[in-house]
Length: 195
Image (cartoon, rainbow, N blue to C red; front, side):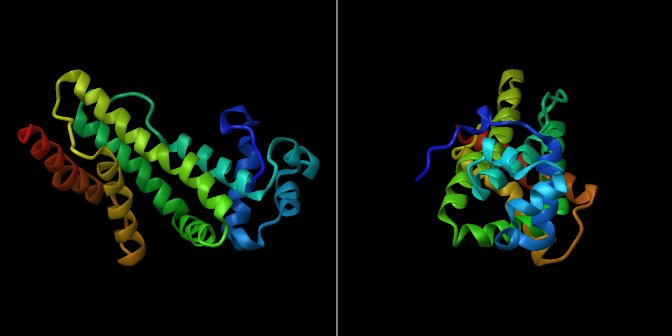
């Protein structure tokens, strides 16, 4: 497998990343070409290849950049409101990119290099967001302990994608608050009582 620079060392180009996501939404991963991305972003293909050795690396980095843009960077001052903001960010990702995420998940089944990059660089960001929120709460002395933090982080995308894609229902704010109040907070409170 080709050695590639870590995502943190590669070029950051929001216009290019936006073009990648636009082309992916329009034609899917298999039919996306570097030529199409270069044309959409108004850059040369050589410029892209100087920073990304191939399509899997470029797509993974674009998705990573997208998730970073939806993350909350500072606490609101309480666990509940931090969780609500975290869930709102996840809902924006699901709503705006749900079909893209489905197509990407499908492509990951047949492109092992893409699957590895997405699992290493994109999926952990949601877990880091959850870790950050729980860390802020712990610093304030709020109940923020769960037996399995990875499982806790998986709850939000699972619940949101099920409602949006399986049921075809909107991720309105009332529902997002319900996810926090009826699922996430009870899990945290129960875990803290069992300590």
